[in-house]
Image 1 (spheres, rainbow, N blue to C red):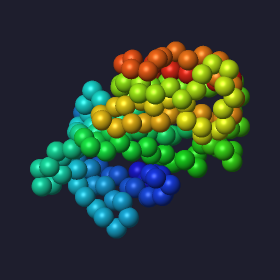
Image 2: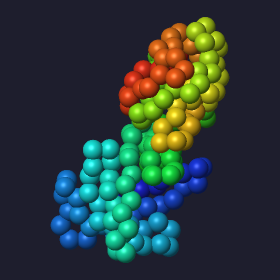
Image 3: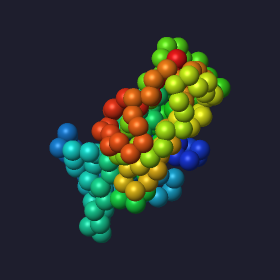
Amino acid sequence: MTFEVEVGGRVHTVTVEPVGAADASGGTFRVAVGGEVVELDARPTDLGLSLVTASRTVVDAALTGLPGGEWIVEFPHVVLRAIVDGRRYQRSGEGEAGGTGAQRIVAPMPGRVVRVLVKPGDEVAARQGLVVVEAMKMENELTAARAGRVTEIAVTEGVSVEAGRLLIVIE
């Protein structure tokens, strides 16, 4: 399988092929990114994947899927936002600005609310910061997908949140 993965504004072509038998319990895969090719043993975990390289280095990655092909990938000391096959998702010039209905901003991963950057009634622009959630010692600023008005704030600073918890509603 070949994917386009965008990380930090750069698009990479990633090819993943099973080496031998692979199923839902995992297997060995050949992964090519650019000119680099590695073989990894991959096993699912409660939060994502456990990857073992040929040199027996183990790397655990927590994965959180978001709408529009976006993923949050958490490694032990790095958190990345990636878009997988972004061209498959219809996007207007401002991300999801063409969508309709209320925007429900939810916690993409377990963490603690560090700052709430808006209040009910505030008008917000597309991509404006709304709330900062700390997870795995990294601060993640969650933003509005499109312009609107804040109608609900469901959390306060300092509160712990689980993945998927409603944080803010924008109409």
